[in-house]
Image (tube, rainbow, N blue to C red; front, top):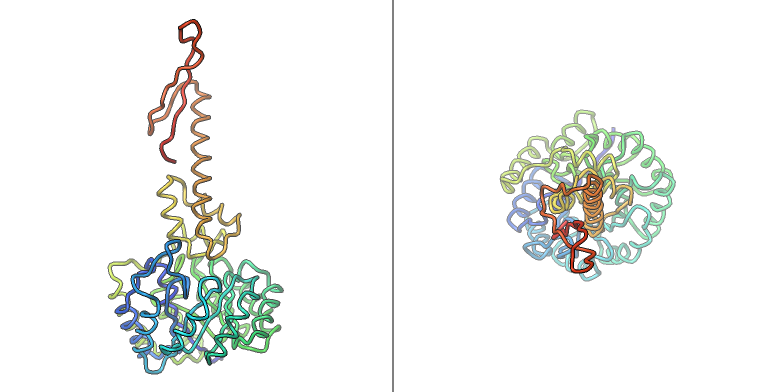
Amino acid sequence: MTDITFVDVTLRDGNHTYKHQFTSEIVSKTAAALDAAGVDIIEVGHGDGLGGSTVHIGRSPEPAINLIKAACDSVTQARIAVLLLPGFGIFRDLEECKEVGVSVARIASHSTEADTTKQHIRKAADLGMMTVGYLISAGMADPETLADEARKLESYGARYVNLAESQGHLVPTEVAERVRAVRNAVSIPIGFHPHNNLGLANGNILAAIDEGATYIDGSLKGFGGGAGNAQTEATIAALKRVGHTVKTDLPGILDAAQVFADLVAPQPMPVIDNDSIMMGYANVYGGYVLPVKRAAEKYGIDARALIMKLGERSVVAGQEDAVEQEAQALAAAQAKAVVVSAFRVGKPSFRQKRPIWRSEGRRGGRNEGTRFQEVYQSI
């Protein structure tokens, strides 16, 4: 059986579900409960990591460093981690985190762009942090590509490579193939971060461990992007049931889950709903579930069609503008189809918007013909 280091990501990935509105109080009390349960590493921050609090993605009610300090001040044994995507986070963010007590820096990139992390991994290492190379959307790269990217991360100084299955798209055999390829390519440990869009998070974790993964991510109540992450308390129970060694106490983590649920009430917990299933099927980044729902409602389009378009486009984390672009394109196509259909019938058949009739072709002072055009005020 395997010794597992457990990383709880509730206070970072869970921020996606909470629209990036975590407060210092929520962070402090949750971190204390996780610490009491014996969780090894607790990740904290904006859903998109350091520097992610923007109008484009979603602003936090407090500076991220306040949340991170609250976590650091609330634990006695757990290590506090942060996530940084180069382009959002900068060196100064890492320096501030080190000053308040952060000891683990997870430096992230898309699964085919590890080269963007080199400088930040080395900076975090220079600061004395445990550095992690974090590959987002591992399901969008084949095993050989992931192995190549993992080699780069090891060469930059990463202490372990974390494969994030951000879309909840892979099945256990596919997870096993990717972890095996990375294990054969590097000499450092491997971690795994699943999402539950197809209900396979814990099955995928067990497959990853069978192939050599020793760092496992989860979140309380499954709080995270898409249909959520692996549910920490269920994952701990499953790992213990199989016989893996996990320091986290099961009754303690069940208590922590209830503490967190009470703090964020009445926020509903993530479920595997229709949109989440479609995102897992179409291989779309789980952090887009709320933007997709908002865009579908705003433009009056089918969220499933929007998700499939995003999948065809192979959108990656940080492309929130693509959701709006594809939603506008679908709405325009939908509107055009309605207008064309009405012309074919030969008379206006619009029920939701009034057509504006315009006269055309005056000759000799007489109106010899009219046709209609519908002017959309919004689509």
